Structure formats: structure tokens, C-alpha cells
Image 1 (tube, rainbow, N blue to C red):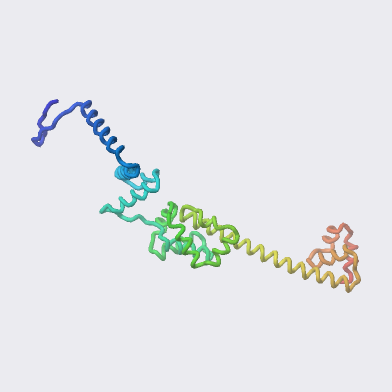
Image 2: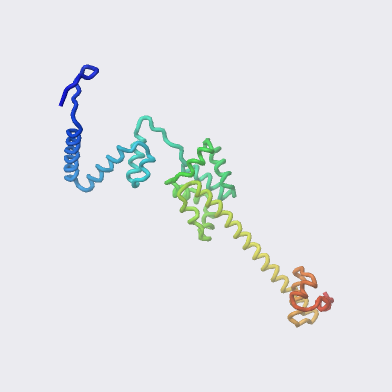
Length: 255
């Protein structure tokens, strides 16, 4: 081992690589022995602390478990130069959800509304919305308080998983918009079916009364009257019943 004078006047000791490696190995063995003396809980806590201390950014903690991620986030928050990242607050999420559900708005309109209400840049807002959020349950709970009837309707149709399963705000907004469209189409179909059932009942009543008035008991003639009342031409009715148009004309002549 040799001594050399360092530039600032101090002595620096030069040691060979093998000596350095031996010292490192001894230190590691000693540390491992001390760790093995700890309880299981203490060992896990120690290893967790060491892992967190070696991580420089939160993104590096993503590959680890929830405890490591939380500990890393708390560590970053305690640093003097920490700046809270933009995120979708519960209030922002609720405003967007209510707009889509109650006001029948689009996802794009929801982002615009949230940006205006909360004084946020819409581009940054959309970027944050694509990242996983842990306040989705709270957003849905608060939204339900504002639009309980609509949420009950979603549950009744068995579509609730569309709202509570997504992992990002963006997918939550998208799925909510799709769900409301599906509900609207179901309502429209039910209304149309109801209207057709009423029209059919009215038509059948008319056919029955006309048949009674004319003394018609022939089923084909009754069907011909019904189809005529529904707006079909004599030619179309004849084709449907497998007769010539003149026959249809004769049957319906009394109408």
C-alpha cells in the first residue's frame, strides 16, 4: 500500500482492488447477519425502506407492490422541492360524469366543462385522465348522489360494471357515454314497441268491427282488411295472401 500527496495537500491512500472487494464482502456479510437477527416484520420493513431510498422517481416504483409505491410517493411529497402533479380530483371527475349522464353531453364536452370550471389546461387534463386513478369509487359515489335515478337505471339494465370497472378517468368517461347511449336506444326501442302494440290493437279492433259490419268471417278477408289499414296496396296484399289483385279489390270494395 503506498501514500501519495493529494492536490489539496491531504494524503490519499491507494488500496488494491482485492482489498476493497474483501472489505465490501465483509461488510455485506456483517449486514446480512444483523438483518437475519431481526423479526420477519422488521426485516420486511428494513428492506422496504432500503428499496424506497434507492428509487429516484415514482415511475420506478410502479413495478413494486402497493406499499412500496405509497412509501415512495410519501417520500417524494416530503422533499422540499416537491411539486404536486396535476390530477383529476373527485370534484372534477363528478362534474364530468354528471355532464355526461344528466346533461347527455359528450366526453369532449365533459373535458371542456371540467377545464373551465377548475381553471385547467385541457391538454394536460386529458393526459392526466389516461393514467390510473385511485379515486374512481369516490367519484361514482358522489355522482350517484347527484343523479340517483339515472344510476339506478344503469344498475337495472345490468350495465353498472361499465361505470365502476374502468381504471382511468378517460375510460370511465368513455364507458359512461356509451352506457347512456345504450340506455337511450333501449328507451327508444321500448317506446316504438309500445307504439306498435297500440297501433296493432287499434287495427285489430277496426278489422273486427268492419268484419262484423260486413258479415265477413273469412280469415283471408280479415287479414286483407288489416293489411289495407296498415297502408299496404292491393297488389302487395294479393302477393302476401297468394291471390290475384282483383280478388283483393273485390274483398275490399265495400270499404
